[in-house]
Image (cartoon, rainbow over the protein chains, first blue to last red):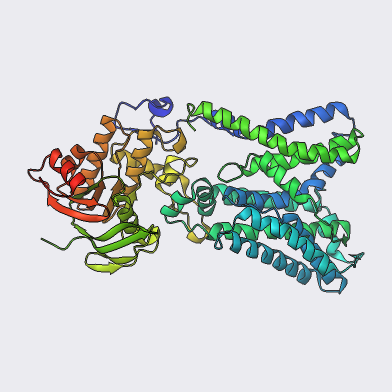
Length: 348
Length: 248
C-alpha cells in the first residue's frame, strides 16, 4: 500500500523506490469532485429550499410521498435509458413503448388473463421493440437518432392500432397492488420501492461490473474500446432491450396505478426522462455521468412540477418549465465542462 | 536461423482505388526488434492494423510460429499474444490508469459470471506493472485525461508491455515525447526484446531506429522495397532508402 509520504505528492515524482501511487485523492476531494460533476444535486437542494419557503404544504409527508410517487415511473425508465446514453446511443421511443406495452397489458387483463402472464407478455412486447431498434442502430449501423424517432412515431401508431378504439379499464383483483399498494410496515408506495431497486441495480451495474466499464469505454471512445477487443454491438443492443423493458415496467406500474390503459399513456414522458438524464449530467454522445445525478435529475423535475402547482401556477406553465429544464441541462453541462477544463489545465 | 514468430506473406490491402499494401512480406524473430520505416502514406500503419486484427487484408497470409492464423478481430490478436501501441494511443480518457491497463482484461471476483470487478487488486497490480517498468505516474486512480501527453504514452506502452506475450507492434510510440520519455520508451522496447518477444517498431526518428532495431524493412508506396540488417548503416542510408527505395 501507499507509504504516508507519497500520498499527497501530486504530479511530482516520488523520490524513493515507489514511483506510482494508488490513491492520492482524499475522500473529501472525491466527494467535492462528485458534487462538481453533479451540479444538479446542488440545484435540487436550492429548489427544495425555495419551494419550502414559498409554501407550507410543500414539506409535508403526504406531499413528499406524492412527489416520489409522481416521478417513480420516470425514474424506472430513466435508469436503463441513461445507461444506454452512456454507451453512446439514444432511445427516444420509451414513451411510445410504454404506450404499446400498456395497451397490450390492458387487453390481456380485460380478456381475463392471469396478471402474471399478462405482465410477462407485456415485458416481452417491450423487449421486442428494444431489440428491433437496437439491431438497426447497432449491427445495422443506421443513425440511432433517426431510427429512434421513427420508432417514436411508429410504435405510438401501433399502440392505437392495437387499442382499436377500445378503452381497457376497471379490472379487479390484486393487480392494482403494484401501483397503488404500500410496502407493509414502512408506508412507502410500491412504485417508489420499484424505482429505488432499479436505481440500485443500475448503479451497481455501472460502477461495479465489467460490463458497466465496457459500456463507458464504448461511449467515450468506441474505436479504442474495439481495439481493446470489446464487442462494440453486444452491450448497446442489450441496453436498448433494457431501455424498452424499463418502459414495459413503467407501463405495468402506471396501468396498475390508474386502473386503466388508454393509448395516450406515456405521451411526452420521453421528454421528462431525457431531461432528467441530461440534467443528471449524462452527456449526449456517451461516456459521462452517473446514476446519482440522474436520480437528482428525476427528483428535480418532480419537485418542479409539484412546487409550481402548489404555488398555483397554471398547468401550462408546468410544461414551459419542463422545456426550460431541458435547456437548463445544457447550461449545467456547459458549466461542468468549464470546470473540467480548468481542472485539466485548459486542454480540450 | 529459427522460424520467425510473426510472418507476413504477400499481404495486399486496398482502400477503394488506393493500394495501401502490395505483396508485402516480412518476418520478425524472437528477441528481435524490426524497424518498419517509410514515408507518410507508405502503408506502415495499415500493415500494423492488419496484424493487430483491426482491418482484414484482401489477400495474403499471416503466420505465427509458422502456423497460419485468421485475425478477424483485435480479440483474436490478443489471444495470439499480439499487443499493439497505436499512433493515436487508443486510451479511454475518463477511465483511470488502472481501468485502461486492464481494459477488457478486468480481474473479477468469483463467480466470474457475475462480472463483479476486483478494483483493489487491479489497482495494486497496475501499480506493480508500472513500477516494474519504471514508469512514473502520480496515481493509478488518475483519469487518463488528467495526465500529460508523455504519461499517457507511457501508460499505452506499459499496457502493451504488460500483456504482450509473443509480439508487440508499436506505431510511433515515442512521437511527440520529450527526450527523457523517448528514452524510457526505448528502454521498454529493449526490455521486451530481452524477454524474447518479437517487436515491430514504426518510427520516423532514424536515430531511434538505429538505436533500437537490428533490422529494418522499408515500405514505399505500399511495397516492401528493402529488408536489411542494420550493421554499418547510417541515418543517411535510411533516409535514402525511404525517399528513393534504393540503397546508395
